[in-house]
Amino acid sequence: NAGVTQTPKFRILKIGQSMTLQCTQDMNHNYMYWYRQDPGMGLKLIYYSVGAGITDKGEVPNGYNVSRSTTEDFPLRLELAAPSQTSVYFCASGSVPGAGGTGELFFGEGSRLTVL
Amino acid sequence: LAKTTQPISMDSYEGQEVNITCSHNNIATNDYITWYQQFPSQGPRFIIQGYKTKVTNEVASLFIPADRKSSTLSLPRVSLSDTAVYYCLLLDTGRRALTFGSGTRLQVQP
Image 1 (tube, chains in turn brown, blue):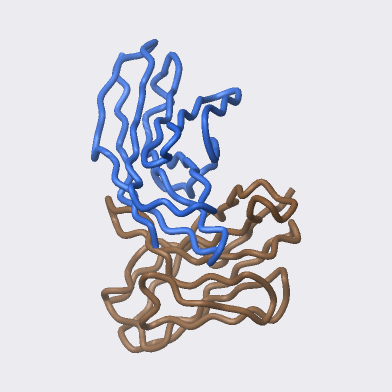
Image 2: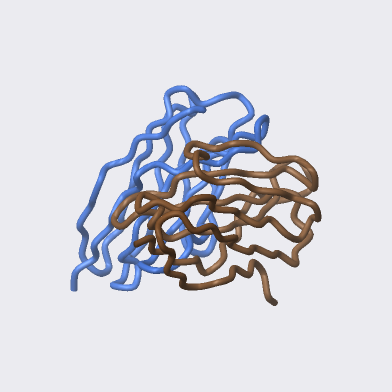
């Protein structure tokens, strides 16, 4: 089972460059999330989506954009990369209780991004 | 969004039972309480979820009092491999957002 797949696993960017982190899930989950985790810290919610065509901001959306054109894909776009965006990024998908699901979130392996 | 509060860290020894308590005074009626485990360089992994009273699965138990303002994750007979960060979070079924707190860093020693 592939589950949640993130690419790339590692990337080094220069200040001001842009890039897209890819996230794909094969579990037909409606809900998808992007988190960032700085060293020694907890996860911060960047953006989330409750279904294709619907996205919403989380706790730390500035400097990022997302789109959700299909159920499977939820790419995260970094515009004008800054050193403060150096972090590990996790994508997750899941369902919620009461909607025929368990509420469990499934996470990808993470994408480690360094901005120099 | 309702916030959660957990101890920053806990220490234990192999074979002991570990109880991690989470406070969520502003929990909403529709919120579920969920716990995740995270090892270094990995994404969090689901442990257990509950709404009220007690829930038990093969790895943990979750105790939720009647007022639901707190919850306790119980790990029976921990081993070295249980050393990890444990997160308590509320599943906001209304808005569907899921926010993580700082977590509790559990260190299990021989």
